[in-house]
Length: 376
Image (tube, rainbow, N blue to C red; front, top):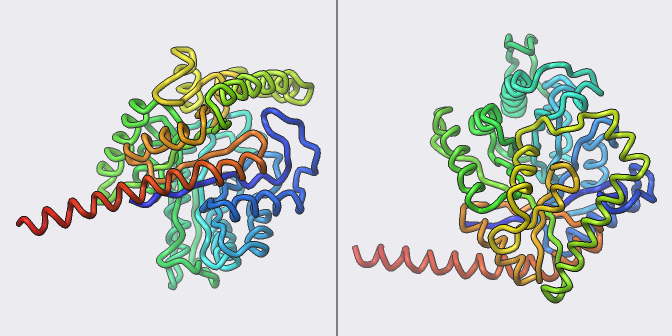
């Protein structure tokens, strides 16, 4: 089973631990970070979405025109554009990147954040809209004949695009979430289902829920699984844990800075999305799980997004990632707190170890399969 690595395509140098010193969209920094990934064994990078953040499709097009092999995962919220327009945007970007695009559809887990751009639908209704949206985008990518649509959220007549993706039959669709509505939508429509890093047992439970949702939707295949972590690595275990505690201290100090206090006071005090609630529940139950999973980073951010850490030497973190691979996680998402330096270190010291072990396991499985076939 192949393994892939997903990093972050930040357009500025700020993080949970460090105030930004660049512009929100800094061309030089964007390319430096992307090259750090491309040159150190990463497969793709994520252009995330935020209500006030730089427009990710334009930033992704800029990167795609500068780099040759790095793949792009583009986050998109269905509330910000009509699905036919979005389909053309994605197809054009797939052309610019010569077939390196995957689209990650975000339903939105925070009402306040959604309302910043005029979206007042409740969350479960947003999942219904996302399912309809994805189906329209897929049809626009693949239909060479005009088609009509009369759905619950969108209606149009006689649409056909003049631009189609390089990838056939279409680019992959990525999706995430931890609620029943999310499993149902992603199980039905996603090629890749994205999870935040949780303890192994809980991750296994989520994978089974995704598989069940895909089966309930009538699929004969299942989405590939992605899991996301914040690696904190150092040459020794002692140094790694010292670094981890410094990181949590920096996160807490950063959250008390004036700009983050302002955002917290104008937004929801407690997370509304199930995924963040799960992270906080896990953190409240314990700090350390399995081989290297550490939850204080998630607790310090209020369960914000991808925030559980893997702490240890490169060897420890690689083995922890292989534990998730053994569960069926094929795409490993990792993002440090110093975007460039951490991407380089992870690429140098962790990715080769994981790829080597995956190759050994695949070879052993192939040999075992050949032996069984010969014995028949």
